[in-house]
Image (cartoon, rainbow, N blue to C red):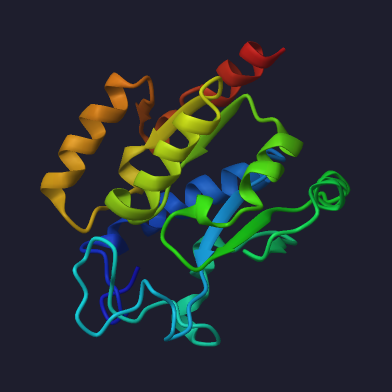
Length: 206
């Protein structure tokens, strides 16, 4: 998110006001945030001194460092942190259903679905609509959206395009076009926080 970070997404700072608006809006409307965060050690396969920028990346989000933490504007509320170690599905479902705060998946790969507990949690939450935002559009967002399209095709999926930034702009243009063709609704922050999107979702799920 910051230019002095170890794996800076170009122009990511420009997103911060919108990230704050979306996060504050969710908390103000009792909408649970389900987030993910890399939690790396040097030995993880994704970490490389000679990265290919596809499957491997420079050291980033190293456990115990400031760069691993979420920025203040996206601070979660009473997060239930779910590590990528496989957990008993029934026990995990009970924990999720008894928890009123946000949820944070730690991951050792850029794909959030590499955390095997994501699917059981999705089953427990059974969302009708998912609004996705953050960085990087062409890495973490890409795998999250494609995983949701594969595993939860019945969910209405919204990508907040002015709350995302890519590492590679050319790849991002292709992805946005592809997502739109696959039924993902491409929206802006204003549509979420002021444009009646929440009311529309509430009517659809009533």
